[in-house]
Length: 379
Image (tube, rainbow, N blue to C red; front, top):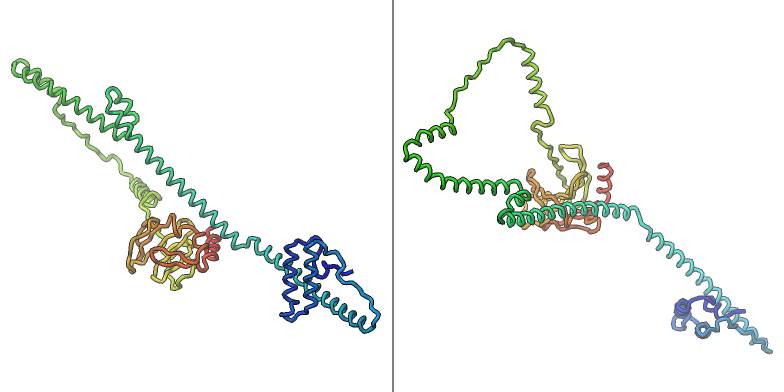
C-alpha cells in the first residue's frame, strides 16, 4: 500500500518543518512550468495536505477495476509511470540524505582545532602571561610610589608638632631625618652663641679672666704636634714576590669583575620586504625573526626579549607612539623596545594581516612558521 508519506518521501515522526522543506523541493522539480506533470503536482499537493493534517498514513493510490480493457491498460500505464517517478524521487531523497550526512561530517571536522589554531592559542597564552607579569611589575611600582608619597606627607606634618620630633624622625627617611636634626642643632648653637657673647665680653673686660679664657681656648684647640714618620728599610729582597704581584695583577685583570663590555647583538640586513624570516645575529650565535618595511625599518623578536622596532634614521621622523621606548642607536637605526600595546605580542601579528607602527606597515606573512622555528631554536 502506497501512503502519502511514501509520496513525499517522509516518515511519520518527521518534523513539520522538514516536511514543508521536502514539499518545496519536490514541487520545484515537478511543477508544470518547469517541465513537470500536472497530475504529479496535484498528487504532491494532496499528499502534503494529508500529511500536514495528520492523515499521511492513508492509502494514496486506489485500484479501480473497470470493465473496459482499454481503460485498464491506460490506468496501468499511469500507475507504472507513477511508480517509476516514485522510485526516482526515492533515489533522489537517498542521494540528498547522503550529501547531507557528508556535509555534516565535513563541518564536524572543520570545527576540530588544527595545529595552527593550537599554536595560536599557545602564543596567546605566552603573551598573556608576559602581559600579566608586566602589569604586576608596574602595579607594584605605582604602589611603592604612592606609599612613599603618603609617608613623606605624614612625616613632615608630624615633625612640625612639639614633643614628637623623635617619633616622627623614626618614620622619616634617613636623609630627611638627618637634615631636620642638622637644622635643630644649628638653631641650638645659634641660641647658645647669643647667650655666650655678652658673658664672654664681660669676662674679658674684667682683666683677670683673660688668662683662664686663653687656657680654655688652648685646651679646646691644641696646637698640632709633629709626628716623626718611621723610616722603612729593605732587609731582604725576594724576586719571587714581584712575580706573585704580577700574577695577582693579571688574575685581577682577567677576573669577571673587571671592566667587561656587554656584547650588543647586531642584526643582519635583508633585501626581502614584508616577509618574516629566521635569522642569526651577526656577532652572536643567537637566533631572531625579523620583517623589513618598504622604508628600510625592521621589527625583530629574539629568544629573550620583547619585540623591537629598528627605525631607519634616513626617513623623516614624526611623533613616536607611547609604547615605543627608546633603547639605543646602532648604525643608521634608532632602536625602540615595544613592551606593550600594538605589535608587542605574538598574537597581534598572527591575528592581523599587517600592523602599522610609526606610519610604517609591517605584514605578518610567514610569521607563524618563523615564530615556531624560533621557539625550537630557543629551547
